[in-house]
Length: 226
Image (cartoon, one colour):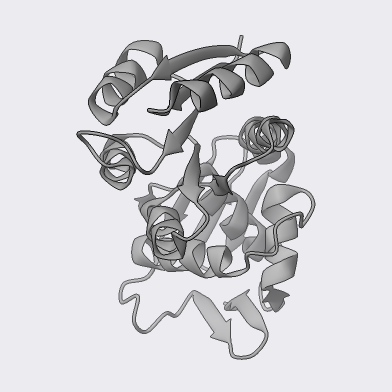
C-alpha cells in the first residue's frame, strides 16, 4: 500500500489531509514538527511527503533541504498564500509541487495521485534515449551526462526526459507544466524555471553558461542538439 507522510503542525489540517488520503486508499502517517517528520521518513520510507513550510523547531525548507541530501522522495509543499519566495525556494530545493492554504483536500489527493503516477509509470514507458553524451534510461530512472550519473528528483527526471525525446524542440513553460502534471491545472509557470535551474546545477559543467539545457528568450527552453 502507498504510504504518505504528512508533516503539518496544525492538527485540523493534518486530520483533513489524512481523512481524504486514506479514503483514496493510501496509508497515512503524520508528524507535527520537522524533527519528528525527518524521523518518520527514516522509519516509514514514505512514497510521498506532504510538507508544511511553517513548522516549529526545524523549518519546512530546512526539512526539504535535508531530505534532498539523501532522498528523491516526492514532496508536495503547503504554503501560506503570501509566501511566493518560499514557494520558489522550496521548488529550487527539489520539491515537486506546492499548494497554498487554504487548499481543497480533493485537489491535494489529485495532485498526490498525479505525482505518484508520474513517479511509478512514466519511466518504464520512455526506454533509453541518447542525445550526444546525455543518456536517459527510463526503466531505471537513471540519467548520465559524459558518464557522470545525475541525482534527479522524479519531477526533474520527467522534465529532462521530455527534453531528451525531442532535442532542439523549444518547449514553452505551459507545455512543460503539462508534461509533468498531466494537465496544466496550475499556471504557476515560474515553478518550471525553478526546476530547470535545479537540473542545470546537476547537469551543466557551468550552470551559468549552459550547453545542454538552453533558454530560448521569450519562449521557453530546449535541449541542445548534439
